Length: 86
Image (tube, rainbow, N blue to C red):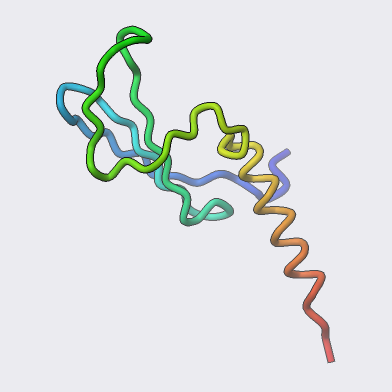
């Protein structure tokens, strides 16, 4: 069912300023992708962001796992199609 494209990741749990962050470091097809998330107690909770946090991508559909995986698969297929055998 996965067609050989299994998402591999290592999850790190990091506490910073009283908040628990889940940092997923992907391998395999999504190698190089690192996503961090934190559960808020309420929507207007103030949050002290760690210095290693990048841009906010929660509402950006490009960062949904299925979309990232699809783009990588398309990229791999394009790369393979451009290889010519002599």
